[in-house]
Image 1 (cartoon, one colour):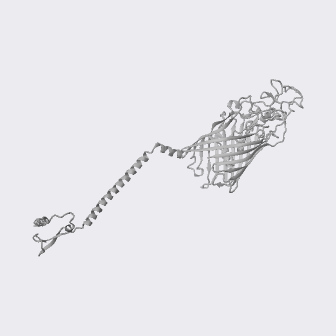
Image 2: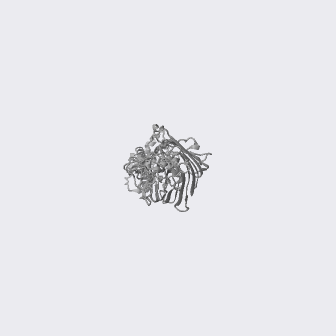
Length: 592
């Protein structure tokens, strides 16, 4: 029955639709109409009029064209927006994937630049100066590779480059550092051993002055530092964290440390560096801070090493090695390097840089065969505004003829006889004045005698005996410091040295004082200038030493540089006190 009702409804609907004329798409008045029929629920018959038992049935619904159009538009927009959103999402995913691929396939040059930035560092250092000597004499070098003519060359002046570094650092990991530092330096020397570097004793004498040969005056390049360093020696020990181990051509524990304490290395050398101790040796060392009480303050700072007996610019010949150690104590702790009160001790022990077969050769003058010892004790105090340090130096066989005349010296000290020899042996000669002939001393054309009043031969022989007899004891006292003038870029600085090369000699003609005083201007963080006065004063009045007295500390009469030395015991070798040196320097430092 139900099926018949459905069929009847459908037939009625079809008849109704077929009986209605076709509507145009634009006939909104017809499209908006609806048709109502009545259905007998019992029989399922469809009527066009209401009646008993009949219920209405509406076919179609009113249509709103504007609403339909809006719905179509909204639907279309929604689909477009959904499509755009999907496209944007897909593009973002594709971009992220591309970025990942680019990161994974980063070009080699980008890796190279990143590695260079993280693992390499380059620095530079330049020291230059102008110097003017109002009085010239024999002396050690004021700065590295600075030489000057000797007595009789007043008003000598020169522009110089005393140090140039390029510092190359490589950090393969945070624990390791490689440093290479080539150094430009001035080479100095005479063309032949028969040609003195200069004839500079003045018009009244016929001697000559020389300095140690170091090639021909061109600028040369050598390695100042070349080492590998391990930076995490005590990384698991909190109180000693920051320690290092260094192997290669390295700074020793004292000189570089003291240069930083002084702060004016571009002006002059520090005490033991001026006397004899090179700043660099080949060897192995360890250094670092010690922090107590669980804080960050440094209470101890140490440096310890074993090195060749030769310096970085000397060939190693010795079978032995030298040991150096430095310990600095800060009783109240230091938040930054050198802060506050500090007490420093340094010790160095080694042997002459000579081969084993020469070490055992018996000789009156031990010279470079002797052992050597250096001690320094410092008391220092540093603030951001000023610092001051006092130093006591003690040494054994640590200052020889080459150190005394590293700046310039008589040619006799370098193997060339100075002055004009005396060929005749007679009571009236300058050599034998006031002394009777004994037959022990003779002059001839083939072996002339030194003219002790017109040369430095006899005097140099005495200096050699004083400084190289193997029983030499060195004593020195030094003071240095600086003061930064508030609210300016200016600072005043100075250093005073009093040194006795061998205090075993009751009256040593080589005892000297040296003082440096000046003012510096900090142009910027990289560039500094200074004007200063540098002076070496041999403080004894001029005197002589009898041959017999000189023999007691190692003077040996005989042939020296092809000439005869005075041998009569009661003959006094005159004029043993060297001349003073006075100079004005203008210095510049560039450090990056």
